[in-house]
Length: 396
Image (cartoon, rainbow, N blue to C red; front, side, top):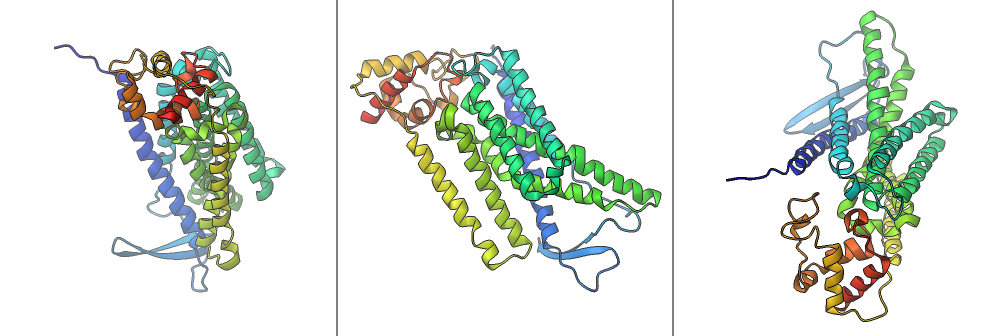
């Protein structure tokens, strides 16, 4: 008996599993320590050098945590570090980017209608955005802008949106949204690798050597940790955006605006929780959820307003089947012709009109409302064909 193992798909599955597990661990510790930092309360009975303490209960036990303003007077016997969650999240995420988007650049990364790039050129552009966005972010944080929280927040938002606009001009929508999430994730991981952990190591080295640690090291690490906290919710949605192609309705002209809604709404929601954890009540907590809801509704109505133009002519069954056979059946067949798949994506086979009717909502979302399919538009599906297919599907 002979058989073939789809190694790329298995690699994608295993790496994605690792990415999810590491990401959950990183996000969990990030959320917890920001909560812990904001929950600290100062009391007169605290020991010298202790900034505040926090009590909590979990799993049937009570926990008492204290934070020092800078560091204890001497090195504790056992010290727990939190860094590998961030490292493995980024490493597994980049490996997944390589396996899916670099190895499958023609299908997943490139959109010839936007920029007819060779795979090597597209991969180079991808790496350039990941590295370049972090370098600009790092320069902003270390510049005078970094000393003003509002100015830095606006500057980072503009950096993300400028990157989003450029990415939507050269990559497919799916790849552009994913890359905005990836560059934010790169910034977050670099914060841990370049600033937070090195600063903590310097503090530990000072303790071991009997020197007084520099308070600025902790303040800088705390600033970067807070940045990561506010960026977490947007990056999560951007990373799963491929499952919701309606988000791509802004297309080449307005895709960056959809990303703006996501980034701002995610930041506002985190601000609510951070303010609440810090003990804020009343008016300081009255605006976040209404604003987040308005942003979400604004996004929904904006995307709805970008609905596809449908054909004004009646479209016959034969014409609809011809379009699907030409542009969809290469992947959505019992045995896909497209080498990127060993089985039809999502188990959807589109080889007859009944199947097309059964999966009409998915086809409308993927190929009519958005241009997510065909992947990379390698078959050259035109706007007219999308309008015709949409007209036939709406008439069923």
